[in-house]
Image 1 (cartoon, rainbow, N blue to C red):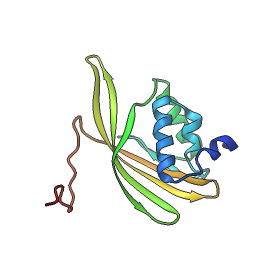
Image 2 (cartoon, rainbow, N blue to C red):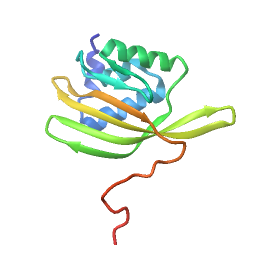
Image 3 (cartoon, rainbow, N blue to C red):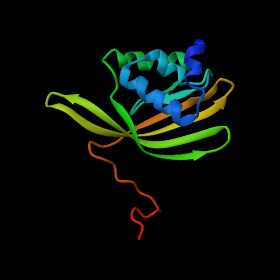
Length: 149
């Protein structure tokens, strides 16, 4: 599965730009743009909330195509925490997800980790691991005080 030069050219920035493109692709149900965010490697991995480990680009594409059959995924990254190095970047974040219910739109939260590597094609996602969150915003447990005096 080869990515077009145009798609690759749009993702030659940094890990933050690839992450923005990934969430934009989710919100627009754009499978080609979404897959262009992923590294062209057999061992890339994706875990959806409550789901199995999905390995490889063909399997990952199939899971997102199945999800997009129901429409776009209204998810936005928030409260991103990063650990960065020269060739990798790990982003842990809360995904604010809009869910359509019989009572109208509601929001829920998912806890996600996105891992990016700098490849020959530029920065690309190598792992997306999402865990179920809660219907309301998750309170973070941290050893850093939330209010500085």
